[in-house]
Length: 465
Ligand code: GUN
Ligand code: ZN
Image 1 (cartoon, protein in one colour):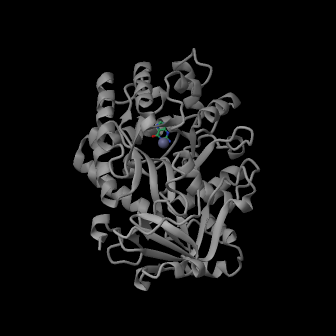
Image 2: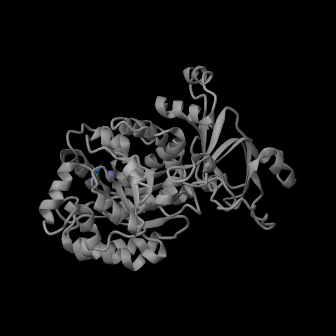
Image 3: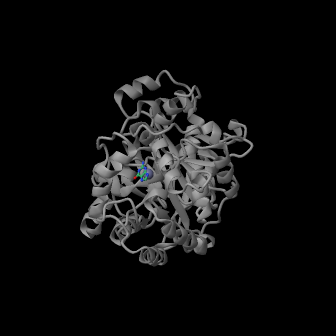
């Protein structure tokens, strides 16, 4: 990460700016001295061209350098904190229609609500409708990148990426591979063919604009060993081109017990994935609540990322994620935050942080606002190995930005009178968990969501000037 401005492109888009209080991370506060890990400007200015941040810093020192930037092209925010857009490292867009369904246990909930809902995604129109709603929810909450499960059907993948292209969001998704222990309506009926379809979708969508592809075996119990083997081979064929692997790991004890029954020869759950070539640097493991030390070591050595999904873990009564294990200084992991909708109970990353605090408190550990905000932004980018592309406000980064209201309600405004630092304010916000916190969301420099605009959501093409 560098502070050196990017030269203006004389043939490029006109310059635009965003002014106000800004906060951004440049290093991991779990590892380094926290005070050196972030950049906070009371009156900051972000200069944007061609979808990228070309300069950022203190308004007074930056503004004079850009005489060609028109005053009208600067969006000025008061009583707000301008952050890199949030990164949701694990979410199922296909579960949006069943969020808030009665839980019981994970495996019951999957059978009763999740699988029947996902079975409907062979219908492209239905998939389109859900994708539309999902993106609206994400952008309303200030989430700009997500690592997303589609489901079995090609239609579910196409609908997702098509909507993402309309907003020009940087998203990761792919076909879910699942050929056993599911209803016939959702199962891959032909294992070989399931991999061919995944590869076809990969070729269609990976690096198509800002879209990125992931090989997604749902979790070990819903794939035959043959499918896991072929999924691992597919991932290994494309990992050097930046293709991801995304799955669930060590979420709840009943799941871990089931994996032990299905793969009795394997020493632990992580080794199952490793055996099939699925544990590598672009692998993202959701949950990791009940993890043995030898598993953490494998995950660390291979450079895997972990998605902590606190509201889902509480809702489904899973295990409790232990950030101090994941961030053990001798073998730290890349950790980000996931909503895991529909196991998660809302689309808001700040609200997940409020839940993450409580999950840690259940084990007498406290997660402060500084570390939390890092997990929600740069930490998520590190999970995706995109920390030089998204997740920070600095020259060269893609201009994906959220503008969080520091006074989102009358009560919050009154409460804020009794705070002093920005981290105190952010802690209050994530704890109150108000739903209306985000004023605006910028994707590659365009304001695709504006809480106060008549058309709150607008596609990128509608915003060209
Ligand atoms: N494990 C396998 N599938 C799922 C899912 O859809 N949600 C959650 N929370 N865990 C899973
Ligand atoms: Zn999940």
